[in-house]
Image 1: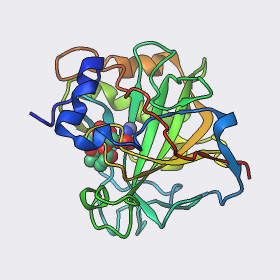
Image 2: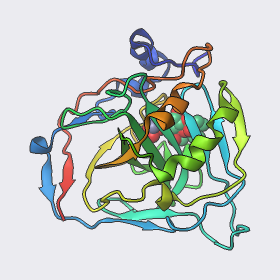
Image 3: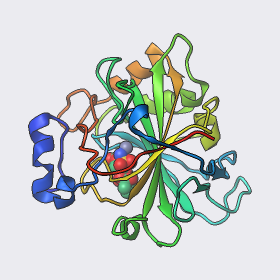
Image 4: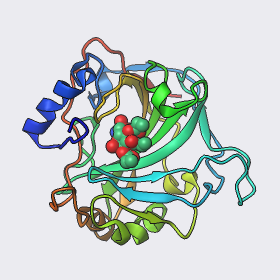
Length: 268
Ligand code: SG5
Ligand code: ZN
């Protein structure tokens, strides 16, 4: 079906057959080289509610392409917060509410991230997906150029494990097979996932979803200061299975042309 896609090179070349946007001129991911960016002053990313515990129950899914955590839409949660985390600032055209998060990783340590920063492909990249609050649903938002904002964080192999990933890592064995879903027995905050990252420095540009339907609706914000991930932690991701019972690894899209887009680097 048109909803089945894969990451092998021939398969990626076929994405545009069923999803025309995948052949667009402002696609993601891209390679970013600092010397080719525009250094500008702009506001930091305001991360409102990132310290709050996420509403539960949090669901973790292996959909055969990635591991995702979806955030339940509730107005008042049992943890006593009455709003979902959202972001504004930077060059964002409005306020964007969190929808979920997921990961891209490799079979080897020197690959996995989708974006490449100064010729470095990191071991893993985490995407925190947000929807422009002016659209009621993510489906509607993806029809608009200002519909979504994704924060991208990079992981670097390290002796020490990143404390942020511990909860997610502990549950990965429950979703070893494609289409398995688990309910987490705990909640956590988004800021715990990104603890220690220098969020004052980032790159931002206009691009797309990195999977079909490749909607050109995303303001990307990428934080190059990497998060540590231990060999044990990354090996648990690599032990997951895809829909063909193969290893779920190398789930990153090939680099897309930058074209005439401008990439901004926040310097302060
Ligand atoms: C993953 O990447 C996500 C998609 C996400 C795309 O395939 O998959 C999951 O999280 C499994 C459910 O997320 C969803 O489909 C959540 C509903 O697509 C979106 O976030 C758009 C809704 C592409 O996202 S990315 O461009 O950040 N890589
Ligand atoms: Zn992604």
